[in-house]
Image (cartoon, rainbow, N blue to C red):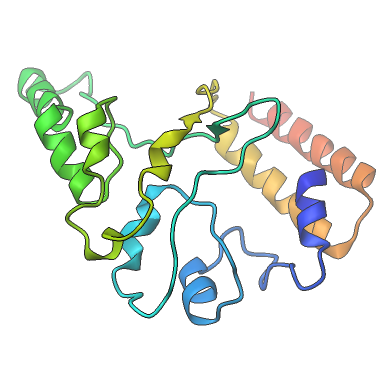
Length: 194
């Protein structure tokens, strides 16, 4: 919250719609030009195919001094075989195929970050996309993601509670009050959802 407050209290730096958890980054970045940079994962490049008149590029995420060359959590997608499946072997073969070097390299060429550690797949990232031909796509692979954190069944709702209270920052509410009210709401949520 302190980091967020330091950002949103810069004059002219408040979100256009503070009540929205997410905003239309493409509209604000490319059309309105009210956002100067986007800290985003690689899928951003897929959305830039129609931004031919915009001068943009890619760099590594900033990192904290205590965790140099480390960025946040990767945005992962899960593919799994459900226990009740009548076709477990076939489903697993599909997963094996999707995670093969060949398929991951092809997906990387089309702007999907490889799901495997494979330097050859990383080296061809975005090569089939016109919008990445002159971009610094290597920046995506220079740093490492932070270790994966333990996720509980409460995370999604707890994150929403914290996001709601983060809006109080835009109104100038006292930080201790925000933290206390956030903790109270989180405690209530956990108590009623044991």
